[in-house]
Length: 173
Ligand SMILES: NC(=O)N[C@H]1NC(=O)NC1=O
Image 1 (cartoon, helix red, strand yellow):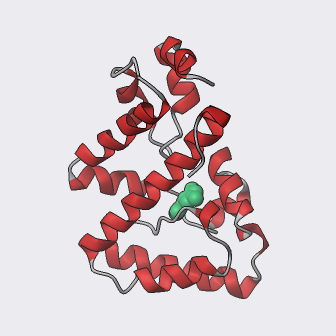
Image 2: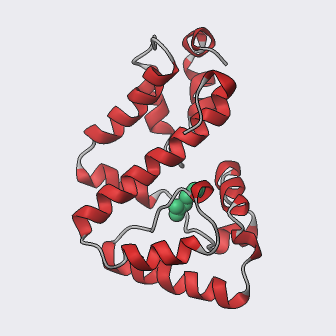
């Protein structure tokens, strides 16, 4: 998909196509549409990220809270968004042993209790061994630092999703 195609989309089409670049936050695509035309695909990405960066902390925390747990019950039930289902399955999180699933559930719960938002990590850049390791490490971080790390992960997920949508016209991270 090239930038002319993106710039030609009406509001509905744009939100249909880009509404889940940021998990379960179609409002962001809706806001980005108002800022077209985009000069190129990197410019499109910049608008997504600039919107996120300009949000108050409550808005950034809201984005994190829209993310489903990694290896949570929704993955097993198959009720995640298609993007999330693919990312989590690709990281091997569907194939955890009962003990691994329990450990991740405990770590996710401790993380949520400590920070007040779910643990977010770009699953496609990770795997079933690294996820619990990274979760345990980040559990020890300070809240402000952790919020910033988590928002960076949201952007990595968004960048990979944009690359999927835009195909070879957009470089993979
Ligand atoms: N909690 C969390 O990180 N979820 C996200 N990560 C990812 O790669 N896809 C998701 O849905």
